[in-house]
Image 1 (cartoon, rainbow, N blue to C red):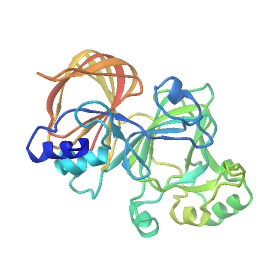
Image 2 (image 1 turned 45 degrees about the vertical axis):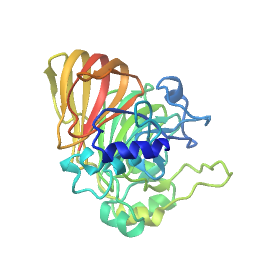
Image 3 (image 1 turned 30 degrees about the vertical axis):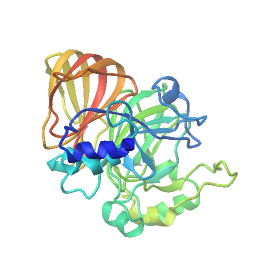
Length: 338
């Protein structure tokens, strides 16, 4: 009997599948990436650069793999397919597939100017959902900046002319960033991460990006990277973003932890948790939970089970309905649910 067959039988026989799962991330070596995700966040890759680590992913372009425990070696998607959609929670019933993707992004160099389509456009043209996302600035170099929408509303004619004349950045909203800043990026919002920024990104489960301007760079094949100007012009909102770059909620103390609501929308709710001691938590049947550790060391403890230690750069999936558990230690992490 193969290992995977044995795992499948445990679901059929009713053995509990409701346990926390530590994940190994697939990594991407885009040309603008750096080395911090390997040296500081313990990501593993044979590639020289790690631009992105997909810390929680069921996307076909990069699947998270369970590491340790009885489901070791299964992808997260295989686990969910076998366990059943109930491990995602009732708030995920409206989604056809796993709703979110969580990344760590190391922008050693600037990213292209780009935009993501909404669901309707993406389903029509790309065969997958669009992308609304949020960025949490984990770390950055002094003076680092990003582009976030336009300085003010412009016409479609001016947009087209600025693309043609390579003057698009002259009218973009340039924002200097600091650790702890939050940017909510609705689909259709033009954006670009600048050099020297490390970002935690929580987004819809989509890999569709329309690149508008790439500073004349070439890829590994020596050719200019593809642009998607026509599609970008179809979907871009030609205005200044309405949301601020600050967390949505105030600091809230709960026992030995401080919670800050960073962003909440129909696709995800994200809080930053600063733990110093012990807190009790509960994964009810409404949604799975994702823990992305950004600093420190802690452990997840359940009655009658061995503790699960986690540290900077670790990602844990907690199935809906797992019930109560404790977190103990000193750490900062992002807690995401649907």
